[in-house]
Image 1 (cartoon, rainbow over the protein chains, first blue to last red):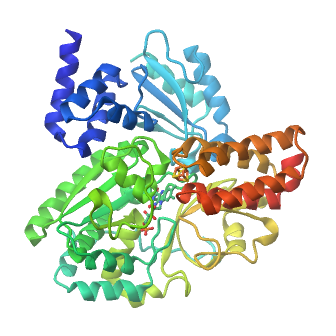
Image 2 (image 1 turned 45 degrees about the vertical axis):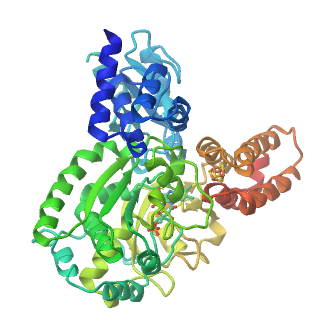
Image 3 (image 1 turned 90 degrees about the horizontal axis):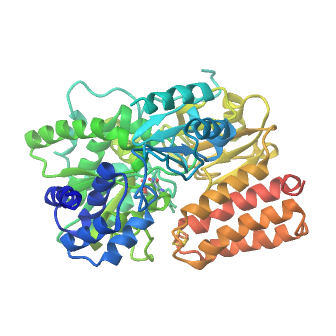
Length: 156
Length: 387
Ligand SMILES: Cc1cc2nc3c(=O)[nH]c(=O)nc-3n(C[C@H](O)[C@H](O)[C@H](O)COP(=O)(O)O)c2cc1C
Ligand code: SF4
C-alpha cells in the first residue's frame, strides 16, 4: 500500500517535470516536500524513471543540505548559526527549542513531528537571530517569541 | 538621513505606470545600441567579481551557437548579504525586464532564475509576476520564457559553473575554467549569468541612459549599490548608496560609536580594522563588496568571528579539490590549537602561508577567497587569536 502511494508521488512529479536529467532537482525537491526525506527506495525509483544509475541520484541528493536522506520530522527547524545571528543570541534560541522539544540539534522527536537543525546564513542578518520552519522564515527572535512559535506548531 | 552618506533611489524606485514600459521601449532598439549603452554606463556585475556586463553579453552574443541561455543568479548565500531577497520581494518586475532585455540582445529564448532554497517563501510572488511578464511578452511579441529553478541549501551553487551543474541535476561542483560561461555554460551552451541586482541596473540604464547612470559613483565604480548592513549597528537593513564611499563615512553613519572592524564583502571578503577606515574606499578601486557589510564593535571577539567564517567554509566547500577541502579544516583546527596554546604563536604565520597557497591552488572562488578574511583578521587582530 505504502509503496504504491510512494510510486504515485514520484510518477506525478516525473509527469510534471519530465524525464530529463535537468528535472532531477525539482523531482527530488518535490519528494522531500511531501515526505520530508528521500528514502533509498525513492531514490532508486527516481533513477529508474529517469534512466539514471541509483548512484547518480544518490550522489546528487547527498550533496544538498536540504535534500535529506535520513528520516526527518514533519516540521524541520533550521536555526541560522552564521555570525550575525550567532552574535545576537542564536544559542539561547537553540536552547529554548531544545528544552521545549526535549531533543538536541540534529535529532528528531519520537513522534516524528519535529527535527532541529542548524544551518548557514539564511539572509536575515539584519533581523537575527532567525530560523526556518520548513519554508517559513521567523526573524527577530527572542526566547519568548521562539517559545510562542514552537508552542503553536506543537498544537498543530 | 545625514548628508554624509548619499542615498539613491534607482533600484528600489517605483515601477512605471505602464507595465514593463522600459522593456517595451527597449525591444525596438538595436542590440549594438543597447550594448553600447551598457559599455558607456561602466556597469560591472554586482555578484562580487565585478566583470563588465556589456562585455559578458557581447562575448555570449558573438559565440556561434544554436541555443543560448540567460540565467539570473539568485542564490545569495554570502554571509551578511540579503539585498537580492529585498529586490526580489520589492521590485521583481525590474529583474525580469532586465533578463528579457538580455534575452533579446544575446538571442536567447529561455531564461532561468536560480533561487536559493532558503528563499522559497518568495516563490508565489515571483510566479505571479512571471504571469504578468508572460502576458506582456505576448503582447510585445517577445519570444523569451522565464522559469524558476530552486536551490537546495548549498552556498557553492552561487558559483556560476556549480550553478549550471546543479541545474543539470548534478552535484554542485564547480567546473574548470576556461571555458567560461560565455562560451560554454548551462547545457554547454553560451550563457549569460548575472546577479539579480545587475539585471535591475541594466533596466535602469535602459530607462535613464548611461550618462545619468555614470553620474553616480566614481570612475572605477559606476552607479549605485544595494548594501546589506548588519552586526553592531542601530541601523541594520538594506540601503541603496553610491559606490566609492570612504569606509570612515560609512562607519560614522552606520556604526554604533564603538566600531572596531567592518567585514566588507562577507565571509569571503576583507576585514578592515578601525585604523584603516579612513583610507579604505568601498568599491572596485578599494575593497569590493557584493553588498555585505558586517559591523563589529569592541565587545566582539575577532577570534570567534574568524572561527565562525572558517566553519562556514569548511561546511560549504564542495570537497572537490584538496587545497580547499583540507585547507579550510586545517585553518580552523590551526587557530583552535594556537588559542589553546598547543601550538606556538609563529604557527599563525604558517597558517597564513597555507591560506595563500589555497588562493593560488584552489579550483574555484570559494577556496581562493578564504585567504581574504583569514589574512585580514589574523594580521590585524593577532592578539585576539592568541589570548
Ligand atoms: C563561492 C561563490 C559563491 C557565489 N555566490 C554568488 C551568489 O550567491 N550570487 C551571485 O550573483 N554571484 C555569486 N557568485 C559569483 C558568480 O560566480 C558570478 O560571478 C556572478 O553571478 C556573475 O554575475 P555578475 O557579473 O552580475 O556579478 C559566487 C561566486 C563564488 C565563487
Ligand atoms: S575551491 Fe573548494 S568549493 Fe571550489 S572546487 Fe575546490 S573544494 Fe570545491
